[in-house]
Image (cartoon, rainbow, N blue to C red; front, side, top):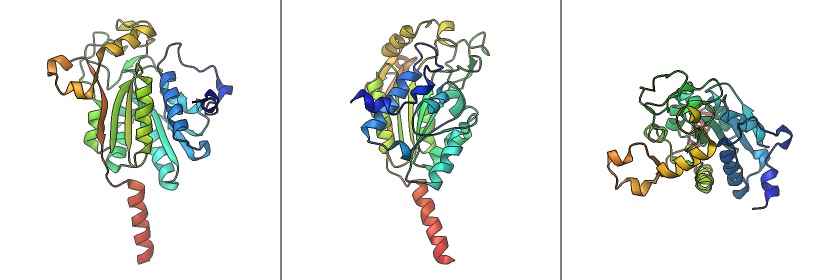
Length: 273
């Protein structure tokens, strides 16, 4: 893929970016842009929505129709965009706290409605931008600024949450496998319905250095060590899966999409009127 095509999707005037050197968000942004290029998407017909957080700054760096909204509310804004113009490609980029804490209600209902939006969740297990507080995905026992003796709250499995809430496509990978991230994002964008791609990443500044993964390379190596393909995980015991990151496509189903159902309701109302 020519690098000029990828560069065309970047707002280089905003570089250098604000992310810490070695942050995984750049890997994810590259995977997203490569997916959009591979799918021959038109920048003028593509919307990238985001909320608040390190991950949400991604919308500012991508040269498309971008929407930087309030904390946890990006899916609500993205839903409004998609309902108004269903023909647009809408991608919502968010962090684990942005998605599953303050934005959790919007997330589960976007899954339930099955609206044609692709949600890319950058899960670094922490609130990276606002001070290193524990998030709903912080592993039990992990240190954060709000859990100085180790987290005791059970953590969300975002993929299981999305599956249970009704999303039509659900997948997970890590930044240690950027090509797989690109593939899953492409599959999610192609899917007619709500797609969730969780990319497990790291914040070595707020999480890694306090949990024995101080350097970016320590995190890359860690993800390679703990990643388990979905097919292999099915042969493993719960004890063997403890602490592992299961990667693969968990859901890929065809169910009615929300904007199409909504259009039918409008048409029916017009005929009755």
